[in-house]
Amino acid sequence: AQTVTQSQPEMSVQEAETVTLSCTYDTSENNYYLFWYKQPPSRQMILVIRQEAYKQQNATENRFSVNFQKAAKSFSLKISDSQLGDTAMYFCAFSSMNSGGYQKVTFGTGTKLQVIP
Amino acid sequence: DAGVTQSPTHLIKTRGQQVTLRCSPKSGHDTVSWYQQALGQGPQFIFQYYEEEERQRGNFPDRFSGHQFPNYSSELNVNALLLGDSALYLCASSSEGLSFTDTQYFGPGTRLTVL
Image 1 (cartoon, helix red, strand yellow):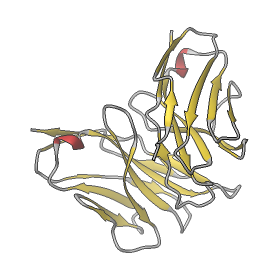
Image 2: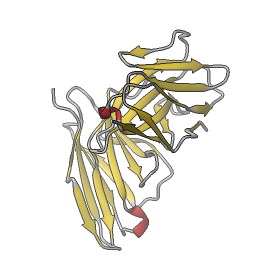
Image 3: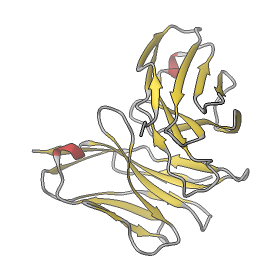
Image 4: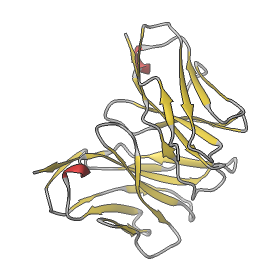
């Protein structure tokens, strides 16, 4: 079974600064996808960025980028030029196929990020 | 483009009661997954529906059941409510769910409180 670990329950960052959220996972599979989701205080979970495991190039979406280290099974999220609207819970998620041939998504426990003005 | 919608927003029930939560998937999606998110925790997979059938299930008791309608909308039913069922229930939709590359899109959730 896959496990996803987010070791930082809470973090804070000054507005305009850069912050990195960590995520590690455990799997024996070779093909999978990784996601970062953001859940603002209003609760709706929003996709931030995703990474294909078979691509070595790290994904980037505007101020959000990942550092994907497949051998180390690490998938960290870097937020540059932090904004007040980045305040949210961030969840790392691992997607693979289960034995029945269907997508299975496993979430970490989340990191609560507070951006300080 | 309509996103994933859920109703109601909040529910308060007492132990032993039954509850039904509803979800309409994002336009163009046919697969609905339900998650339970306890306070301060990540979402835990309950089950997934495709073509009106439960296709896969997480580690949840039979008190949790569901249904999917021909228009792809879905219901989550919980019987004999326990205090521990208090949580945010999230619905996520995707297209077919046959590839690990599919992205799940989430609704705003239903906050269930069991007293």
